[in-house]
Picture 1 (cartoon, helix red, strand yellow):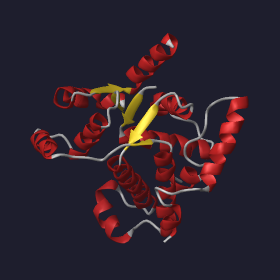
Picture 2 (cartoon, chains in turn blue, purple):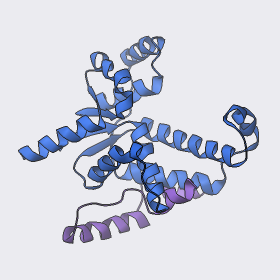
Picture 3 (cartoon, chains in turn orange, blue):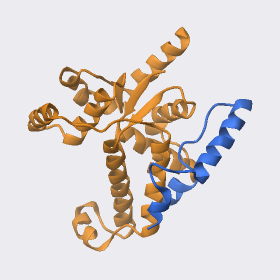
Picture 4 (cartoon, chains in turn green, yellow):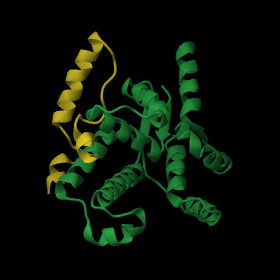
Length: 189
Length: 46
């Protein structure tokens, strides 16, 4: 079975899809490919590896999305988010919901070891100087460390992330490419 | 805090029971199982 690490943006897509399904809303075209991937994930056709880094980042991003939604609901424009931040926080119930959502994903994933060595710090330092956000680098590194076959991200991030193969030695592919690989693997078996 | 009731490492929760139920059910129809409990994200993202 293929062992991969999914990028945080894909988990966010999964959460938005579930949210829309819960509310019986139409899934927009922009989420259709992620919908297929989620369906394959639900069928257990591949193994997703998560480390604490994935968990912490996902939790933080979900909280940020919910907060920004609250800012908008309260009448703040995106330019006023700085002011909104001083007034609006997540309520206890919202924090519990975030925790539960992330926990479900965590329970359904293979737990990987979260490990960064001194050599890794040097690599991360070098690449952040080139403009790569450190969390992207940490997540790709975790995928490599936990012997994943691929790091899978959204197709629109590929041009930016794919060249990192040279630095980390793990293939970084998009959803479409991964679904094709999975299809081929299933046909061979 | 409520979080402590649902510790990341030791859960014998409602969800696990549901997963077992779904697994049994899945043998009859499809292997698919919903990963995040129903309703959680619908309530979070209004």
